[in-house]
Image (cartoon, rainbow, N blue to C red; front, side, top):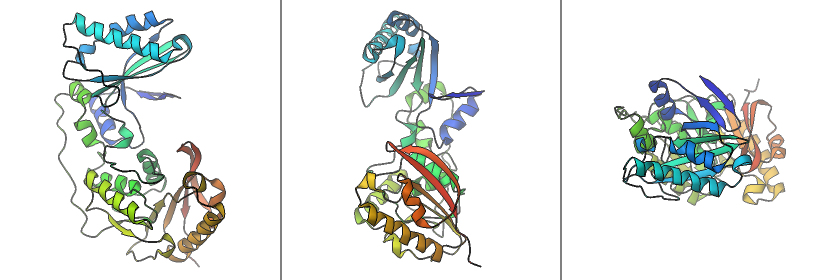
Length: 347
């Protein structure tokens, strides 16, 4: 069963379905178990409701926790609400004679989420140790990185499938290519390692055995990353190594305007080119760059798919291409758009 609101998507299902979702979700930034969703008119109501939750099933002396709080209306003071929830958790553990845990404000084993709106309060517990959207492999981000869920949205809008040729001519720290490689390497279980280390996941599903199956690197490379910045390529290689997919991707230093179609089959070009507000490039230089790169695409990659993320929508017309589909979203606090193009063959 599924429902949604501005706070996310809520669903319930069998254990197997929940596990499958956790391991394979591409777009979620967080996956949480909702422990409580009730009316609370005061901080005392919050305390009493929270104290009835069986925290001893999740938290003990050897498992640290933190609370992320965002409350309003009846619980207008988020910091005080956070303290009342902390008191409720610790008092419950004392009553159950459970050794008290450490409270770590940043690097904790478990994250408890407190949210409220009008007279409704929700308490959730994160199923992963850190944000699912981070996957856990990024050592360095480089300049203006693409977040992992947005990279997955780019792959999905492009209709890229495992085994297809994929080229990112402005790959930066390599996120788009690493996400594609993780799909291939882990047979779609792109969050496997993240949940393997999760204390909450282990408590909820103590008998679950994680798959150790991994696909071998392809004999012929089909994932290619290029960037004009030597440092960006260094970072991308390190991130790919950390993700365990360094043998799946070929990285090279190259100016995108010198990109040639040396690939054996049609494929997908998926990229996040620079745009002024994020990297401070002169807008006239960017307009010329987009125009020249559009010429590269039309001359070299007829029959391919081209998918781009851009936060300056005025630049997209400089490609001189007609879009086939698009998705509006926010990226780095900017209104952005993922646009997909089909590069027609000349007749």
